[in-house]
Image (cartoon, rainbow, N blue to C red; front, side, top):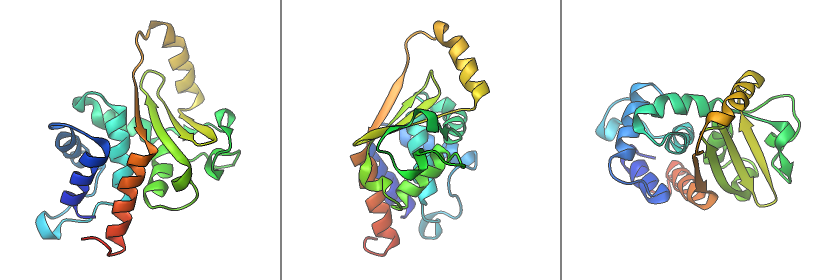
Length: 188
């Protein structure tokens, strides 16, 4: 999907306002976290990984100045198989490989696997440094390693009011469909 069309679709799907999206994209590009290259007609298409990182960025930071750090931190969260519950896709079941939130969302925006039809929302919990994917009949938790979890638990009593940001699965699906239609030549 072309960058301009991508930006418009993200604003429509996620209902971002003002300079939030342009500033977030600028900082992510400067940090090497988004596709970059020529401008105009020679600009590279946005990828499913770009959509995954931008989704995480918009959820993970309430202040644009912290967006790069927050994106890196939340992209690296891995699925915690112990806390997955209910009927969840295969990535959240006991497995040898702990997939990152970034990898799972990249697969989602590529429209691969069963996750695409089952996701009802993605939630990011700032203070706990966790992300939760809610499915129609279950949930998958993403968090850091044991050291990070212990640090957060020891600091928890001094955290104050927690911040949680959520995007509905339907908004993510709308963006994924638009991206894949463009890649398949259906929309320009």
